[in-house]
Length: 64
Image (cartoon, rainbow, N blue to C red; front, side):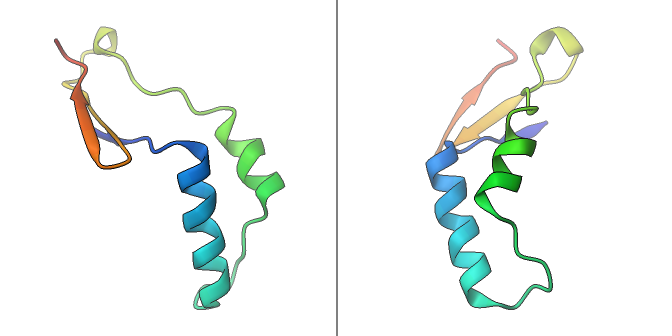
């Protein structure tokens, strides 16, 4: 399982760019982002997945 997990500042930068493009009918606020992001917990190898975590251009194999 590939998990995209960039740092919050990278997510917010991308969110602001997406909102500024205006191509999507829904714009997410920083407040909404933080409400959802605080609940995110990446999967672990204990869940039986072969987890590859991607953070800002790098990746880590969490299954080992």
